[in-house]
Length: 525
Image 1: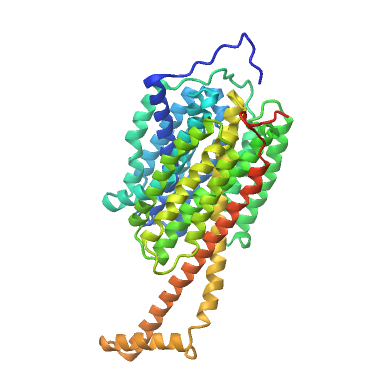
Image 2: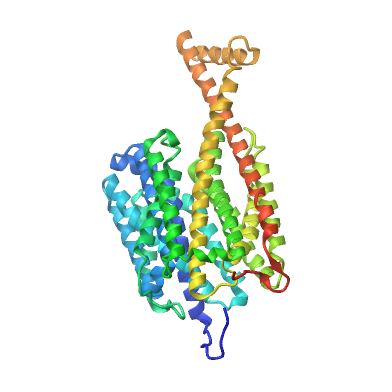
């Protein structure tokens, strides 16, 4: 983009105003990401309170995820249409009001409806917050801006389960939603006072309603399939087949529509920029890694090692603090002209090492065995995230940057959903395979297993149980031991699989075009 002599100079906020603006934006981004995971640990209590089944209560999470990923790519268009100040403030109000209504809900589908509305407000906050933070810094400080935003991306999903577990254990599940209200009220006042419209923003003369409809149908359907596929046995379900076809047809229609008109709801022509396309691949893998490990580790330690939910959540905090510590360092390195490709590859190897260390866990593993891996994960995520976030918007400005931010955030969220779906499928398959192998060794002809069961039976008999009761209890205990062992092996192989997937990023990094002293090059054609 050329700057003419007559173009007005861009004014950047300074002093206290600048940092109030940044704190407002980042707190809203953290709030939105916090709510993607804070509810997960409370689902059992919510289902008991409102009389929902285990399958039905999953919609509380699914509804938020679907509306979130639908609205994120539309934020740039909506922000220009209503004005960034009005749109961001309205998103905070919608999120806060929906949080109140979620907490007051007394039946499942009322709660699901308000979670969907909450996701619409929250999705509007995420991408707009990133453009606000980037806009508070001059272009040569974009790495610092993305480091600040990156901290929010890490801290939100990590602190969610911890905060959710603490609130549920000490208060009630309603407060998982009510806790958003005072923060939302303060954010509403601050955003209306300090946030300004995007410089040079032009209100669209036409709204691409067909584009929006195709986007909603495609992204909503794909997200639904990813969220619900495992529980519905994938393509054995007519519902999953229907939404897969709807998602694919709508996606093709959306792409054709957006490329054929001059007022698209989402400017996918931006993917002509080579590095933006590469950044999207990296963003997808980043989402898979970030959300996938946050999903699999708590299950692993709670099922295989017997940790409590609160213990699990508290353990993950130091790793997030390592990321928060490393982010500004990485931002400084990038600002001083360090090669982002070298930084990303360092992050990939740190993350790969973290996953390989987890992949060789044993039944005797303790918290002490996981501290070093999670420190490596913390630094690895920081080394990957800052350069990737900068790459996704490098060389863009104004409306194009806002669109690129929305696309990057949507792709990262979809990467997380794909990661969780892949891990679920992998674990289901491995659990069945490994259990089948293990059960084959539990029989009267195997000296080890028969001796173990015999010892258990004698132990129960000595406690006063009848022979029949003792045998039943011994076999039940043996089944429990087999289950824990099979789960441990499955999770170990799951960590190994994610680690191998992370290595896929290395060829993509080498494809990035980088000119020393000039940052990541983004071609306009």
